[in-house]
Amino acid sequence: QVQLVESGGGLVQAGGSLRLSCAASGRTFSNYAMGWFRQAPGKERRLVAGISRTGGSTYYADSVKGRFTISRDNPKNTVYLQMNSLKPEDTAVYYCAASRWPSDTAATFGNYNYWGQGTQVTVSS
Image (cartoon, rainbow, N blue to C red; front, side, top):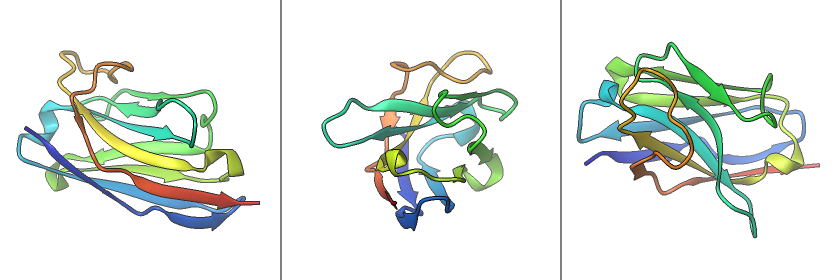
């Protein structure tokens, strides 16, 4: 079992930046691929970014490419999502997730096993 706790959400103006953090506990963090999802009101949860166990492979949704950066610090059991040039359409609850993905690549949507409680990100225009 892996426990995940997100932090760093909040209210920011369009064009601003936020950095989300997700602290993991319970199992060996470096054994898990990690991802960030988001869910806006009335919409499905979507994979925003993913990172492999070692951090050598990443994935980004087209909507955030060039603006968001996912990274991880395995000794600190933490994964980050740096969000720059934020837009009102980035407003959502952001969730951290862990995957027992067998290869050292970013896990695909639908292959995540553990979830955090989420943190709200609101971008005002």
